[in-house]
Image 1 (cartoon, rainbow, N blue to C red):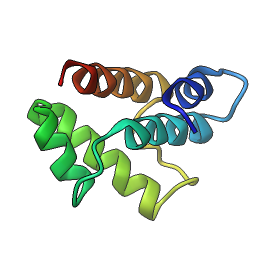
Image 2 (cartoon, rainbow, N blue to C red):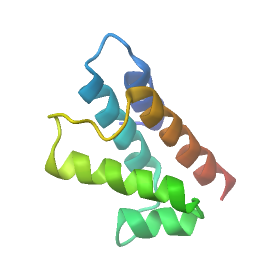
Image 3 (cartoon, rainbow, N blue to C red):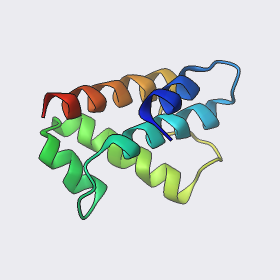
Image 4 (cartoon, rainbow, N blue to C red):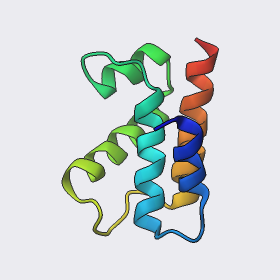
Length: 92
């Protein structure tokens, strides 16, 4: 899937919050450089420590908790994070 499709799903209020947060993570993942790890990719992009920590928390939820609650952040926070990561990628 493409970033544009995934971020559209993340913004879709008709979907469950869990689905929207997962779509935001998938949007981050699909446009990140494919390095040895997602954390390494975020470091290469030069994300600030706060955003890198949020991406890590989101990835942990996707791998270990999803689709169950508690969500690591709200859908709107996840969308904003995905947009910041996407902007950092375009700047590289």
